[in-house]
Amino acid sequence: MNAAVNADALGQPGFGQPDEREIRDRMRRELPADTFKAQSWRVIWFLPLQLVIWGGLATILTAGLAWYWNLLLALVVGHTIGSQALLAHEVLHGALGMSKRWQNLFGWLGFGPLIVPPEFWRKWHNVIHHGHTNMGDADPDSFGTMRRYRADPKQKKFTRLAPGSGTWFSYLFLTYSFTFHAQLVLWLQARRRKQFRGFNRRKAIGQSLLCVAAWAGLAVLSGPLAIFTVVIPFMVANALGQGYILTNHFLRPQTATNNPLDNSMSVRTLPLLDRLHYRFSHHVEHHFFPKMASNKAPRVRAWLEEHYPERYVAPSHWQALRLLYSTPRVYGTPTELVDPNDPERRFDLLPLQRAMSTAARHG
Image 1 (tube, rainbow, N blue to C red):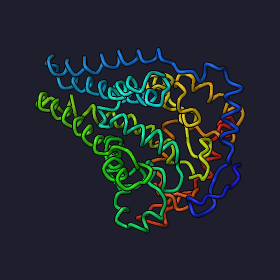
Image 2: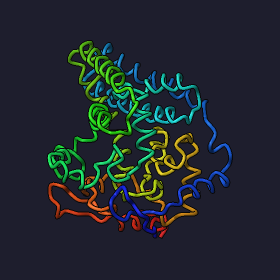
Image 3: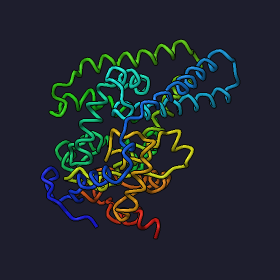
């Protein structure tokens, strides 16, 4: 099991081992060298993705199909927009190489439909989230600790939107929350957090409003068909991404040391979906090597399972989603979740470490 380390950022002892650099260095030595090389050729995947998106929208608008065919096309378009964002995530980390200008171009293709400008994503995700993953209240992608809610009790209401709150509307959270959270970070957190100091927030807000205008223009052009060209694709794209993102860290302990084995979680999904979603299921692997192309991530998974079976956690995607919706979202301690609206409702994360580890899976 993991030893405790001091966690000044949490104000109490934390969970995890400070051996992430040692593990990362060992993998670099022992895995094939091409595991960590940029895979520029993979940019070609944007071509079929763009063809499916624009071809689907054009067919909905011009073919006069029955509603159920339009619904099917809308689901395909939304799924493809979501998949494209996962590929753009790799691009903006540098996993496909290219200059920053070219990265931004493909970043716009992937994240523009979700109303997230590429430079904003780099600052928010690459720098701040990766630099403070699940660390106290420093990670902008966490519901944080009870300290936050004691300081501002009004924030408790917000947690009722989230999975695990038990409200009926929490089951809609996945369908809008990527874009919703992005705007909260941009409009509120980027203004208050010192981590965003120097970031051109006004420019990012203007770019986001242009993305909204593009969706609005498509809605006007579509008329009644906007439910198939705008509403459903937007909801599906959000749900696809959030179905992974919310399971990446919300079921893991908070840590004082940024060790992916201790603060992150991968999932196991169907092989076909894994390929269509650019192996976003391999999230521990991604946090060890953010610039690694996802098609090499299975090598890192196999290595971690062999060498750290008691610490590497990767349940089935379905199990992770079920747990997400049955547990609170706020940290009472680094290893215990609590509902700020019902403090008696608590969940100990340590048994999950044992139950969902590779060692338990191979039992």
